[in-house]
Length: 124
Image (tube, rainbow, N blue to C red; front, side, top):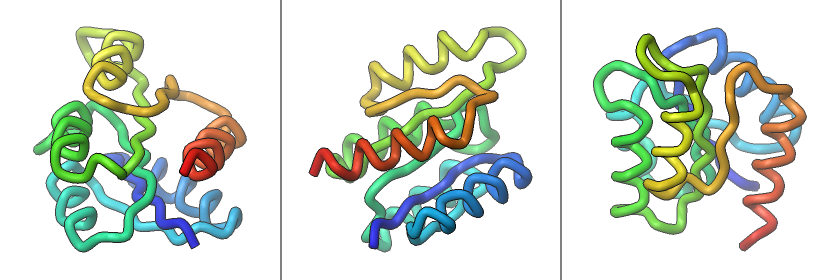
């Protein structure tokens, strides 16, 4: 069973994504920020990380960079609605350059995320 880590500082988003991924048969871990996510990835067994970009402590861009350096086999889907200064396109472009396998702009349809997760898992 594939293990997905959902990282977002908004608990409502974590709840919705976790429920959807559980219904699809995945094991789901959650983290409220980048530093907590890195702790969970270090334990092992994470196949895909779905991460927001704009978060306190370790933001999504730093998280993606760390994952690419320390856990290159873990695939990343970056999600963002943008921040106060920039729209989501700038953040997601940066995420792609840092190694995110796929990117989604918030808000997105749950079936879009489900399809991307499935696609990344089938690439192995």
